[in-house]
Length: 137
Image 1 (tube, helix red, strand yellow):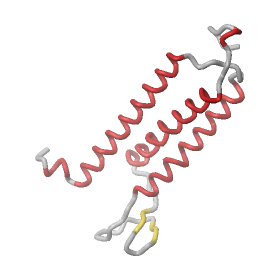
Image 2 (cartoon, one colour):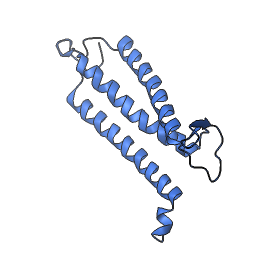
Image 3 (cartoon, helix red, strand yellow):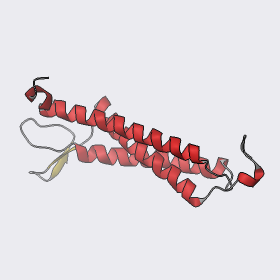
Image 4 (spheres, helix red, strand yellow):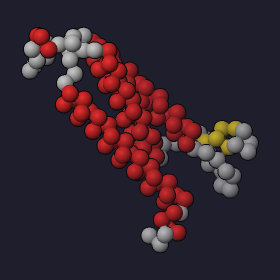
């Protein structure tokens, strides 16, 4: 039994587990995309005119790096989510009830992570595209 719970309180519903796992996946997808941008992780780029992928960025040739960043974010978030799922499945009794305050806090944390990560992504892309320079910033 978890500390601070009563035996009559315990009931971990499938919806509680789904809420936690989906929250982790959402937050981690945004985080790992941000992480790939912030650290400048070298990922392959797609060259649509050539219909090919390359590890190097060729100057003067249009390419798209977000495909690989998105795949990286989804795979890394998927791994973290699976780890969290198995930890919850093994270490928390199947009867544990998720308290409303914890649901609210988890939702706020996920929202904050997504907002911060998306804010950085916009800042990064706007700087790269010259939006700030065109505004005189």
